[in-house]
Image 1 (tube, rainbow, N blue to C red):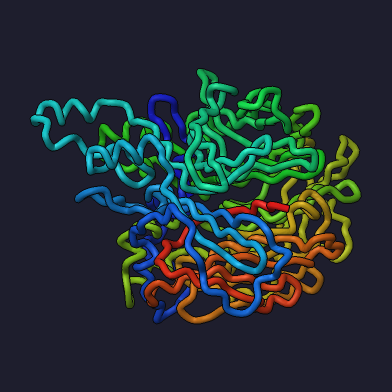
Image 2 (cartoon, rainbow, N blue to C red):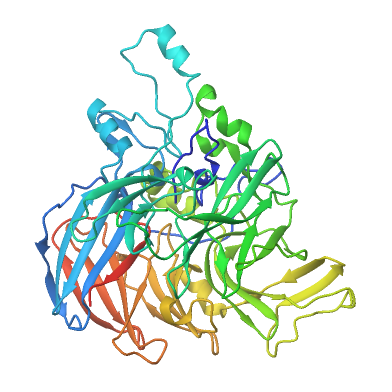
Length: 564
């Protein structure tokens, strides 16, 4: 869920999407993971929308709890054509920001396009001027043949189309993708305030759109860097407070640099895990061929051509002490897997427990091309069935190992845990996972976009998480998972496609699931029937909804800004 990087600066942190992998030629192109038939067409989920810059009222059905006071902020693509040119990939669309203002049981809605440089340049020339993940900007048709030929040798211009998420640093809100650029946003008006470049503060080439925050407000993120010694993965720390009122990322530092196992072909990562004392980086076998990425414009190919799945490589878990910056000498391995979102990570009795959503295959080639999302009938079923499902899993990493720790036996001594961690060498441990679900989750297509009660439970033991079921190319249900017994509660209605669930805690809440779930539900086959859904997080029953009298495209990530 991100944008193209700059070839000049190897901004490759933003090169990958869940569907951009290059297929390994040795793999069966027709491999099927499911046999679902009769999926409804969802082409209207990727139709361009107009912005709604002034708040409009919504129609309330049921009851929106009066204690909810704040802004539910969402981000995602909202414009898929510029003039007569169209973007090829869902993740290329121009960023459209949404705000649902909730107060006194009422809801207003507004939206604005991010006033990014690439958005302005595209509109000014009435065509796509800046390349995105799956779309190469074509030469100016007004130029002669020789000029158009020479333009192939120009370096790619880095996109600042921050259409992935809303994030916070030092109390300010930004929209982010995975390139060097973020944009500071006024959450009350959705106005674009300031463009911020990560590389002006730390020596990294981009950063993820999924930072983690300590209770004191210190924020951690990750970004790549490239040197003559090869590629490095960097842990970044941003202090919690400003020195001056206009500060952005001042004071940011690199805590630790991890060398890539393959120096010229680093792994892609969309996020990372963090506990109280450790950052856990997952080096997965989704690789980036930097040479192909740099030459993509010359070859007239998309950036995604340089990204591929290498199932011959294992996954590596790197553990870094947040406070000392020291990388553990122990490397933890697992079989090849792909992951985009972690659920939670915490320490307990000498173990590091990491829960994440992952699959056993990383070859979902361009399933999220616009043309695929607009398919219907057997063609749509074929796209879905060739995608590997994503499920929640737990890995248990033993932290207290030394030369006396025996090889060949399971070091995971936690009761009722089926995960294993077997020492295979003096500094190597091979791990297998425990499924965090029952067989019933298969009925809903697995689970992605996981969320927890972050303020109460992040980096701590927890019981509940929430996510979207994926019995379609996008989320088509909401799921609550209770880890005690691995029981689920489900909200699902035909023809309705909910966004990732965001948990909002009740005032003075003591119990972990005392609060509500917010989700924006899109109905592609019903005109102007989008609504904000509010569920009781305990019972998972609908409390109320706010109907919005306009069409909204399906988005990516969001957050809730509490205004109490």
